[in-house]
Image (cartoon, rainbow over all chains, first blue to last red; front, side, top):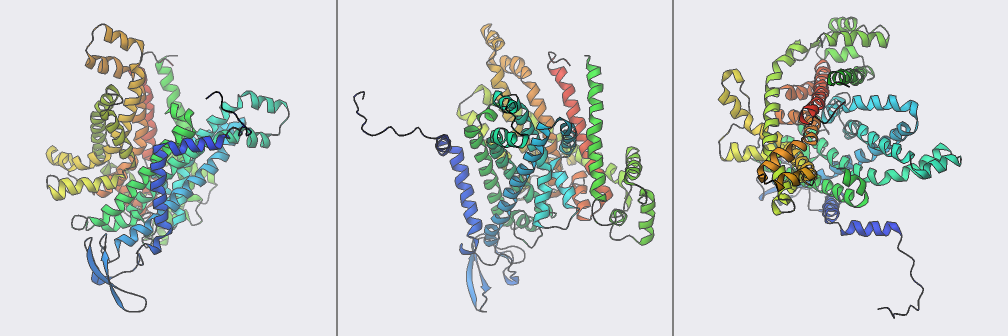
Length: 307
Length: 315
């Protein structure tokens, strides 16, 4: 091997992001979680082309059909066509399969929105608290207080104040998540502040905004991605809980929680209303949590050690 | 510093936290664009009742004054009147405490009894299929929404096997047997997430302790493995386990709300949902405040337990 002659210039060392990406692709947790989430995402995006019918179409003659039963629907042109209800129909004769497929949209929208908003807001407040002593005491007391209210309870209380809509639900789930992000960001800022390169930058007269942007913010990226993933999982769960309790997304929008809420009364006779959305919900949350575990192990080893 | 000094300082420390909670709950109503008196009175109220509430709350006075009036009443246990339930909120909560307390206590006991041995077993058989199964269950337990677990259990034990009631609650005064029968499925449902949480923490904490020198010493002197695990290791691994139980109370409160709704148990969780559906704000405020207070106090108690579990901790 030693006498291999290099007649071409040595390729430059691989840059770090590629190595990180390869590490990610080798992690089974990331692969499994990513694959399931991709499927759910495609399910939501391609919902109209997956053999679904209008998820809100009420069909009085086809109520409470068991999975696999045949039922007929009236198309826009007025003719009747026969269909197989793969997941059965609900108490109003709506096709559960179509509703479950469309339900993926709300779950992902809520999960991703809550994760992005709470990380963005938490990052901003956390940077302020970590860098400005005067603000720190006040901000952290407020965060301690918010954290003392159990998350679901806080979300429920907030939902009760506004008219029910998807965005009300997103805001109500986001607010209880913010204190956790703030605490994490603040602890990162406090430890980064002690680093020699930050001290050097301060000595060289770097302005505070630039310091935060160039030296502090990059340190928060990996933990924020990991934290955001876990927040996404818990947001999907809380949305389903709120909708299931009848205080979440308006009932006319098909979501997994809403489908289950409507199936409650007839559950012992027709469990399919609960089983199919329940499986989708549990599998999606599991996938996001597993992805979070995998991300933590690969891109944020410091946190992996802490847990 | 003595333990009592520490206890006193921690008790004082809960005051600003509860104050923030109170301010938040207070502002929640005032910052909505509509008239707080009309909101508090509910949809069915007439203008006389609204005027009466307006006067009670001192809504014509400055915000700070209003807050002082409100918090003064709350401190004496006066949360006002629920116009939806036609009762004082305090008496309403009093009626609903027993089922919730029963459910929460039973859940915690069940979770600890299942999870700690599982965690010890997983740590003992570290890396084996038992360990992987326990950890796999733990991830699954985190991801299974409690109402999905609830319906799976109902279908299996109540609908299919017919062993247990589908829903409902019997007061403990009407017989312990019926009380317990009604609570088995709800507390099993609710304990799933805790078993996941506590088993995981027990395993992690125990694995750390098992590599300590005194464990090697205990084994070297011929101590049985059972005694090594439960007497030497578990005792030293207890602090993180108790911490996670304390933090888990937040999950418990959320879980109570869901579980009581599924099993139609007339407790505080069910009351919360009913209050939100009816937009019954005096009740919502009281329940949020009460649950937060319990959460803060339990975590204070957990801090106190540390010194008992681990005499090395000094404050």
